[in-house]
Length: 470
Image 1: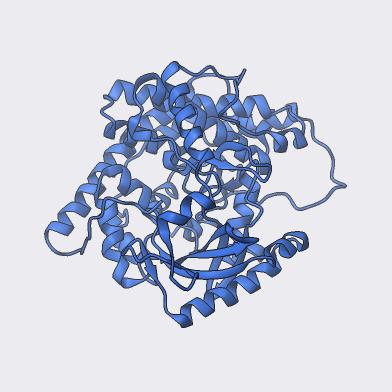
Image 2 (image 1 turned 90 degrees about the horizontal axis):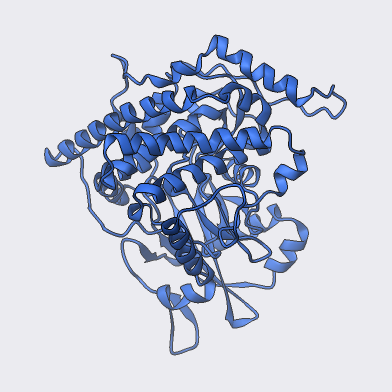
């Protein structure tokens, strides 16, 4: 098993010499000599490529056995669903591809559906990356390649032909490169202050009418997606006045008293990972009930609890998600995690705080029965762009925006000037990743087909459910 040869992030030293951004950009450009941008175009599985189905079976170990058929069923729904759930497969494939050597905090699972809207602590809705289970320090290219592959595969699912898919992927890469260049000479704090507000006009990029309409509709949905709106959908008030979750298996299931006690104890420990002022705020709530809630595609089978709390009366609900954090998909192909990244719950929230422009103030971590967990708000003005609705100009626009947001996320913890220098101003990287994405789209369809065949032969059990639980 090869380990990616990447530099580590620089040691913390406020006394080190300041290197001008122009020089750092030139350093990035020099990296093309060892790893030409054209080298990113090729995807051809090696003869010893691991069997993707065996990798999936390996990733199922330690998960709740009764939910594994549901995970397989959700992945079988389409090639795009397979891509969403198979981060471990793509991580193994990416580990064999060329890298420039510039380390960043990567999302690790930067596909199109892992971008969306959510609320800031100031209760404004922003658009950003919103899933960090696979976050780790690694090559920036791995994130961009996963994103471009998802653009290609989602484009196929939306009926785009090869020319249209290629155009969308190029727009995605253009968005990434454009923002890297824009941020390369910007002040560090200025980069950290940047937010993408979907409800405001953006002078940097002009949206087509359909894209504007889709974003407006999604924003309106986000503004009404909060704790109070979730209450009647998942909980009932009993005759004695108490509130309990409503059983809706397999997505939502009640837990026994022992599990409820363990989750509450974990929340008490989680509180110690919050800043003191937020701990004081959390202390004004009390737990009403706990349930297990299945979410997503790749996360199915992990232990994920939904907790209903009340603060200043029954009109003041709070939903917290207590979600198991597994080792990241890229871990086998990167140097061993050190320090804070060894606790996977802490790794996830560090990744989220590093990559998002504004993060959930309730982020924290704990453990239950020796397993790592992280905690976040469940409904926080969240809404996702319906990618399946997008074609033509609106699909291209969304691909561009996601590429640009990814570049800004990387610039928060790494050096946009070096990345911009490597990317350059020409279309070389656009065209290379267009070819990569098309070839990997073919690979994803083949791997998805292998899963379908294994299910039909009875080798893999699958329970197909329409609701993905998000």
